[in-house]
Image (tube, rainbow, N blue to C red; front, side, top):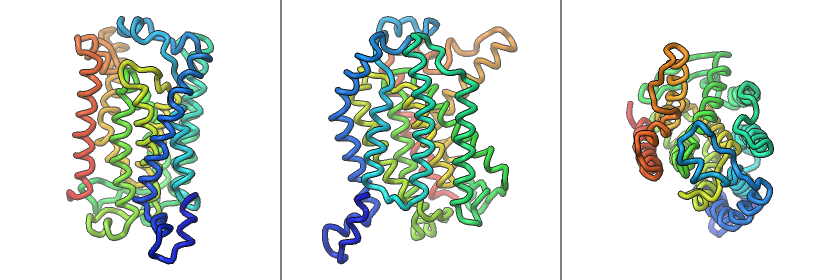
Length: 361
């Protein structure tokens, strides 16, 4: 919205700053961060009054959670999403379709998560919305977004899968790009959701991955950078950087209250929305494979659940003490803060590796 102020610029005044993505990204970050600090506490107090008993805790989970996490309100993702929406609308260009694509995926997945959280809190059980319903709705949303992305992409990239390092290689998936992109977005959403099991465990890797994709979006949206790095140019994706900056600002505002011991949980409202956002950005920027690298923590968390379930059905035995894998380490005696910080460190390492693929070939 504030981009329109650049129309009053003669090229050498304050208004000219609003032309620059970097300046507006900084404004989006600060706006979302301040929003989180101002409205975090009132929202938490409201959630406590409405939820009373807080988020239901799984009885088959780690024993300590029943004592330490009982009564903590959920749906804290509302704080992130509110800050994200207001900040993005304030600082991003409204005529950029990629911004609307990512916002669409983020907030529709957020609605699915909100319905799931509301069902859990109102019924005071951990069942929530049926998994089939959640997946079905997620795939419908992802299908719309995938077709939308194919329409927006340049003709020589639409329906193609790009590869890191092997930058001259493009795999023409054609219409199969739609189900592929659907899997990326739904998979990312549910992988982040599985990771959200300890205080601060999901939000920091989301911000790290988001920051990395903010850089990628900025790079692939500029011809000078794409020519130098020999990556595929996708006009308009640079504006996604504004969204990512708002995500990081809102995420930090949330982390202030989610740091151990958490005053509020993100809930499916936040985890599904933010995971879907990462998937949508990866599809928009043609860096779907890089998402598997940068979001490696989420991939491992999801794989640990898939492997555990498949192996148990076959042998009636477990590979991990408990899945997702962060609970396995809890069962082995690792402290919550120890697990969270180590996963953060791994996320930073993976982000560096993922960003390195921009240069490698």
